Image (cartoon, rainbow, N blue to C red; front, side, top):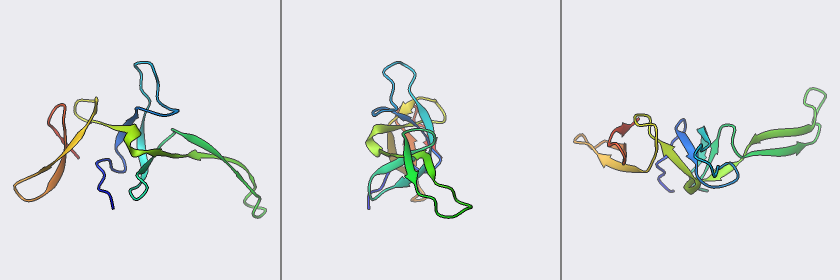
Length: 111
């Protein structure tokens, strides 16, 4: 299993793919879930795919359902909560043998 530096609930910016922007304003969103074995993340409101479903019962009608699709982990970058910029993450071991994520730009801990 691969140890990822992005977790559920983190804010990320999409740097490559159909939701990336060539202008200065990059698209950001919150991570809904992660699939570490496939190295994919699901970002809220980004990479929307349409799924056609069949009618199952009277209460559950069929139709087209829009939901978030997976994005490869290398195509997103974590946004540091303290400096507010996209950054790379390094792991640091504290004195009490606890591993924490640290922003490479400003050096602050990422919760």
